[in-house]
Length: 216
Image 1 (tube, rainbow, N blue to C red):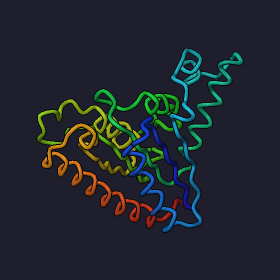
Image 2: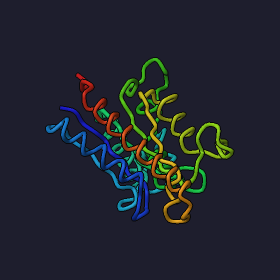
Image 3: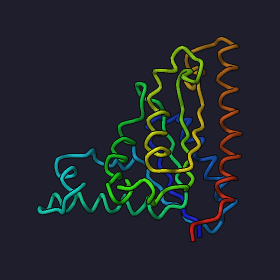
Image 4: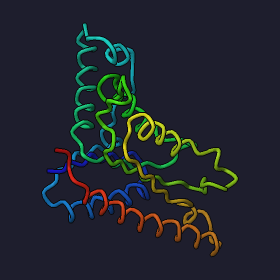
């Protein structure tokens, strides 16, 4: 039975990234009616930022009650990741990078020898599909003047693909604030086209991931 881990991180009531993730989930549910989904809304139920106890227990056995609580959280998050056949993350760009909610989840979830491999050739997550759905208020794509200011996609590609070994696809909707800030028909058309393209890519990606065989 396939298992999907779905992480949402946008606090916006009008979140495009959450909407795209919902479309992915809808397709996933139709294609994998007997699959399970582990869901974390990092805004409704934030994962705490890494503190001193959390840092100690990344590499050491806990000795105090607070360290044991920190280690229990690590264990919970790690097991969710290791149990998932596929990973789905949705996020907006916040001040040129990912939301702090999502960074906290990653900081608490990446443990050497468990999710982070000591030996890159022995990687428990290698080859599993990961899909990241990003919403940008402007245009940070290749060739745009602001491309170098994008610290969302490059960071997540480093962590998920280069380090953890996921088979990663990043899908981006750009100009997401344009409908609220502009009445220029050309700008509105750019926003609509970007969203429509992202929606189509999400549907294709969801079908592809759902069709992939689950781990033995």
